[in-house]
Image (tube, rainbow, N blue to C red; front, side, top):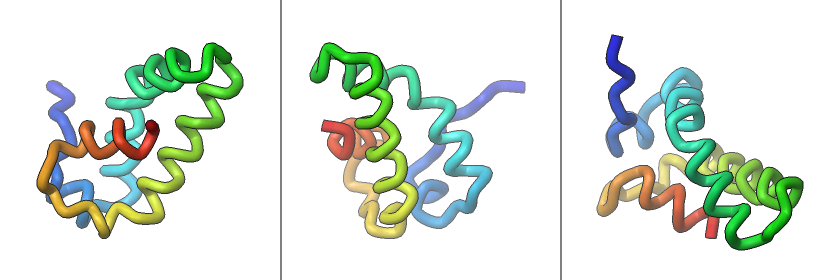
Length: 77
């Protein structure tokens, strides 16, 4: 089975399964980004955790003007 990327519409209207898939698809890239910004594995993990909590709480505000991954990148930074 091919693990297709979460679409903007799925992220806006999806439930826990969609969010879990989005998390799994993007966790490593966001951890690498956060590590480059913080130079600390522990701090990078905290940053990514905070970013995903924010995405989970505010996914309904995502307008879809960009890819969900781009939005996740901006939330992380």
